[in-house]
Image (cartoon, rainbow, N blue to C red):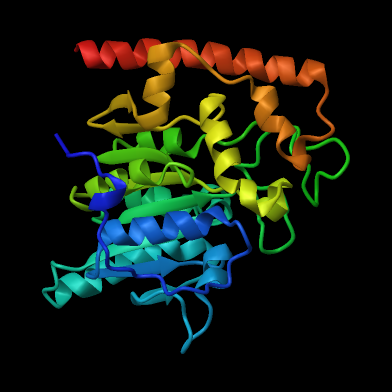
Length: 305
């Protein structure tokens, strides 16, 4: 069993320079810094247009200390496959290829290439940082924008459709490892990235990233809002290994206690849900309660098997 990481046991070496171009309170800054600590120096990043390209900045003052290939929106997984093939041709088995894409470049524009790479079983890690919208182009809705959220192109009644469950889509590809994380729980994130980096084939990690300007909350509340997403049950922390799903971290503790924070608390903390009425919130609360009943039963079955 992998030893759980503590704050004191995190590696001291930093791969992100201080003073990035991320927005104040951006959850991506936390997740990126922690994940690169888990990945280590022998890593090449593949990044499409996204908030991460803004965070990184431009050469020669880029924030990231690791080599990075910037690619087109749709080609992240395909470019990762090409990078992997080039490294293997050079005999560099020691270098990891890691794709970092936003929800638009994963759930929408990049999904076809990702599915193809997953089916081929190429040996790289794909990380989706999900801030639930096209944030650096003006907060447009994406496939992972939750139902009811106001965006630039759903400005009056919010998004009508449910959030696309990309981790479930990737788990259906029978990958060696699929996990969900939150920037608000960095040690859980570190352990999962570290674990994924040591496994063969395509690995997929989905990180929820609180976004102050896109979600509508003060930058100082980023971690608080991220925790509420998990504690309300709207976003689950879990991992799928060998087709077995296990709740992890805070979600495991919630399941043990059978206690969820009312989802209204999460919605109330963000202005993007300001037009939701009590009836809409009650329906979502009912969906979460039923979903969690099923998740707890499945987790208990897996632990008992």
